[in-house]
Length: 284
Ligand SMILES: [Zn+2]
Image (tube, rainbow, N blue to C red; front, side):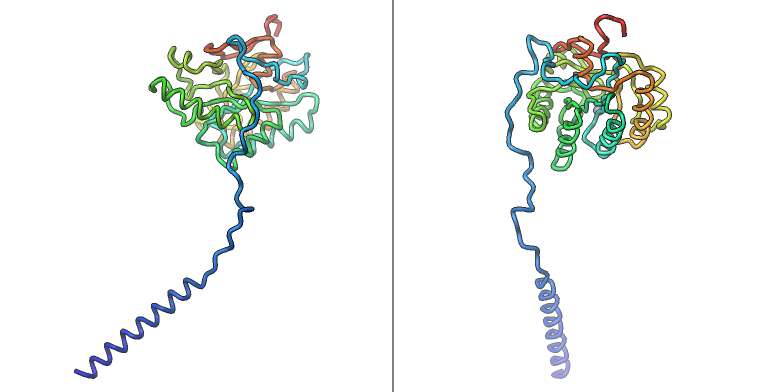
């Protein structure tokens, strides 16, 4: 009986020793020292806003740079929805590389952004887009069907995204594209800015090939057309690599929606829906 007691006691002591040594090993792992320098500030401080982007209910393009637009070229607008996502950096790289080799036909586009996709790293990608001459548009905060929301919730979807975007481009309002293209009279009046739909739908989100995307744009193009594409699809990026140089060879220049509306003298009005922005003279 006594022997059994000592055997149990020995077993208990061994358990304690092994437990203690395990804990000790754990606690001996040292964490890197905390340094505030490693912390990237989330958004930079609010910068000064540019003057109101709406003047008498009309989209104000006074500050929109169109100096890079060639007056002899037909214009077409490329727009990317659901951005900033995984392929935005690749999209920007295609534009940057094209612009380097075609300085007289610089290409830009409009990015319709979702507020809930704007975070620390994507924020910097959007800043890069801005330096390339891209325009930032509003595509709601969380991509709901706006026609199902109360006016209050709808406004929050738009305002929250405008506020995030304003920290990148200093504009208090942005052109709006409704998620799923779903729009109602209530949405139109609550949005308070021009609504931008499209003429050419590439259907890139459905998994169509790069060649199909290319063919859709190339076969339907006209001066003043607005093309719908999405961020997040490798085939879109592949199609762009062919579209930009081939459109250039065909006499086109790819530009943002605001730039096209200004160059075509086609003012965009608050609450109106646009699927294209043709030249006023009708020659294009
Ligand atoms: Zn969308």
